[in-house]
Picture 1 (cartoon, one colour):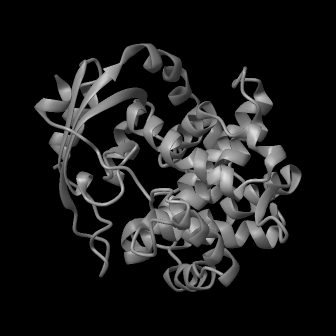
Picture 2 (cartoon, rainbow, N blue to C red):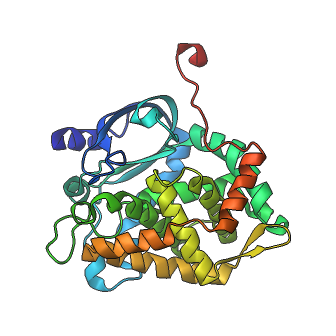
Length: 338
């Protein structure tokens, strides 16, 4: 599929975009090698896309700032990457099974990524639906009242956007001759890669705030919205790579003191300085796992960190009792589009 991937990477100016083929490997629970077929039909939002275009050019400098030794960040992201916003009008196959995709970073082929980069497609209407119908109610139930003002759609959009950008950072080939990271980590590769993208996304947002590149946004908004997003994604369950990744992040951040829970109200509060420290620590841990191709280490990490404590399970059950949905159903077809 490499010729198709390379051709699709050049088709950046279309108003209508189609993504189709065997793409994601999450359904292969044995080795994580076999891809499932899916399709999207998307309409480009040119106004929002214009706001995003400049971030793709920052990848090489951000790669050099990753909190790991030089060997783990020696690879250089492809310089032909781009970043655009779309409204989704059609999901099919694996894309329409279970939780709905709100952002895409493709192609997945590591050789293509290093040679030519990736395209990052943010599905704005799907994001807005999940923010309004799920994230805001989740925050109302589980985030401390005086921090709820930090929940914003712009922060939610940025967190997801930089999650997708972060897939292009880090390391694709192991340092010890074990092949690609995906080959070496087998069925653990998907969940660890999603965790990497979450954490490096926050790392990038923090660095860009420090550079003054994200004017008009407050960094604390990103952190509090990220914590609310962890609760949203954990509910996808252990069968989801995103769900497992978020459970592991929650456990790691809790141990680092990045947030606290008030036992009386059952609500959570972000400790902003400790959150920044925890982001760097977890980013370094994940990148080392990937660079070393440490399958046994990742497996232990996911088993230990992926467990939900009784208190967290109780808090998640509260969301269900309030009838807060786990995900949205995408209404589509000719009747909806009229």
